[in-house]
Structures are given as structure tokens and as C-alpha cells.
Length: 116
Length: 318
Image 1: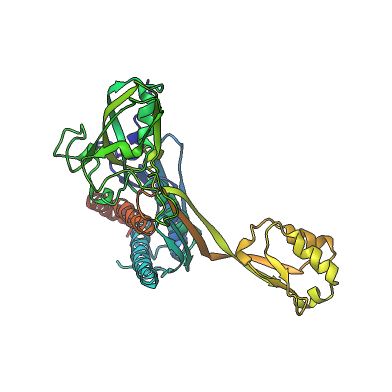
Image 2 (image 1 turned 30 degrees about the vertical axis):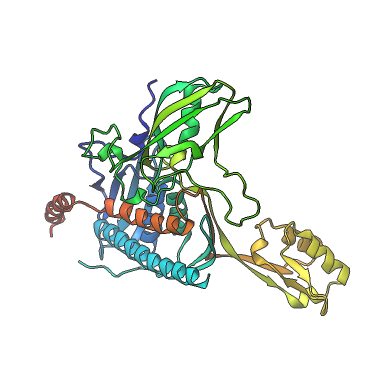
């Protein structure tokens, strides 16, 4: 009866930003990104990609509550970088990795369909 | 400011590919990527499924909502789904799902007039779009496929009738499992098994045999000629540690060493038939790319921070 609509799980409500950014008030080069309507799928790949960046001192994500459809990604970097730069870099790298993966997979499918 | 790129170049090798099944190796990436792909395949690749049902006549033994639920679970061929619109953001209609961009209409009419029980199946659903039809499971192999096998919806006795109109829409598995194109998607780490040959040679044939037998799955065997223990199928290993415990119990720790290669995965993908297994993987990659694009920082957030950055620099005495 009073169950929330199922689409609330993946549709960003009007007037809400998909990604918001908040600097840490005490630590320089640390910030928290709040990503609306995302979960472990995005959180975990971002976190692992950030761990590969040597200017990132800390990167972690959490899903605060299973019924709050958002994740928090916290990044702390060295002075050589900034959380925003590291975040953008991680997304760009993942995007390129997926491009590469897509091509590689298409080539393999092509190879396989020719064999039969 | 441009940082250094930490991009990886994953490798793919397909081992087996059928319309509804794929098995492939994914290398040079990490578990987070493998798991993200798995999750996207299960719950975020769109398909088409019946979502609204208007029952005109139903004198069958099943109630209306029971039948509506069963109709929803029938997989429909969904090659079109990626280019379709979600009915909630379709501009051409009021979201009642009756336009060609976001919905497909189905009709079903069945009445039993004989004493024989009538099976109403997915074959009785008539689609308004020939590209979106119930998935056909008949084997093309050919051996005695006398009756076309559809998915049974309800059985009717003499005089019973079912007449309805249904609207299928695009959706994702996160919304309802009926929209999930994946039957199962799994991945495992590729195991790396090393046998300590010197230690193994110190065993008698009987001991070797009991070692081979200790694995619940057939990972090891004994070469009939040389009587050496060999690894026949490393991927049969289920990370159950039974052989390691056995080696320990025999007083020979280190007889075998087994590692999980943390950058190599073996995927198995089974599709419901809504889309081909190979297309399912490609769609998942595409969806994941779209998701990443959606979480890029917007211009105004960056600007707001630049101002804040200057302010911060002043505060720090910069």
C-alpha cells in the first residue's frame, strides 16, 4: 500500500544532482562525492581504479543504507593531485578500458562466428 | 591539469559461444570490473516484458493477477530494447505505454470447445511487432519436433475462455526480475596449481591414488604410463581446500600449491533467450559506460569548487 515506487531505486528525483561534491573542512585535498542512485557496481570499480592512482592516499566508498539509493565516495590525495582530478581521471581510465574491452570482445565474437 | 593515465588493457578469449550461452576468459583486469559486468548483466541490461494486462474474459481456473504475473515472466525477443525508450521518459505518449517507441501490444484469445484440455501457451500471444515475440525454445536439431513448444500460461477445460490485451514495455532487472536478460552469470578466478614433484615422488602409488581421490571434483589424475600425479582439469577445482587438507593429513604439507590468479576470470553467461549471450555482454559494457558517463562531475560543480579553491588558497596564505 505505502510501498515506495520501484523506480525510485534508479531514477534521480527532480531537483537533485546526480553527483555532488563536498570538500573536507579539516583536511586539504580530501573530499566526499555523493552519487545518487548508484550502488556497488559503480562504487567498487571507482574505488579500485582510484587505488591504482599513486597520488591517491585514500579512496573508499560506502552505501550508507540499503534503502537510501546513494553512495558516498571519499578521496584523499597528495598535493600533486586533487580529489576532483583523481575522480575524473578514474572515470576516464575506466571508460577507455571499457572501450578497449568492447573492441576486444567484438573481435572475438567475429572470430568465433566465422569458425562455424 | 592532466594526470597520468592508469588505464588497463583487458584481454578476452571466447571459449564457447552459442545463442544463449557464452563462456569466456577475461584477463588483465581486476575483480571489481568483472563483478561490475556481472551485476550489470543481471540487473541493468534492458529487455522487453509484458507489464500491463487488460483482461476481457477470464473463466479459467487461475485468477486475473495470477495470469498477468505469468505473462510478465515470459521472455520476449528484445534486440530492439537498447534503442527503445523507457515509457516513463517517452515524450510521444503520456506514459500509458501505447506508442511504438516505448511499447508493444499483444493479444490473446483462447477458448476450449472440445473435451480435450486446451493448453494456452506463449504461442497464442499475438504481437503487434514481429521483432518482439515470445522466445522460441524449439530445438532446431530436428529430432521429432512434432508439437511447437511454447510456455504454458494456463490450461482450459470445455467452455472456459481467456481473452486479454497486454502491453509490453522496456525495463531493467533492477525494477523487476522479469526484465532480467540473464539466467545465470558467474565468474571464477582462474586457479593455478603447482605440484611439488620431488615431494610427490616420495609417495607410494596407493598414497597418490588416495590423494587424487581426495578431491571432490576431478582435478588430478595419475598418468597410466609414468604413474605420476598430473593436473587434468585445473578449472574443476572449486577452492574447497580438500586436497590441501589431505596433503597435510599425509604429513606432506606443500605437496601442492594452489593460487587464484587475481587478474584472470572465467565467465559463464546464460541468457533467457531475450537477447543473445554475446549481445548481452556487449550491452552490459555499453550500459556500464553510460553509467560512468552519468557520474561525471557537472560543470557547475567544478566552477563552484574553483572559487572555493581560490578562497582556500587565500586562507592558507597562498
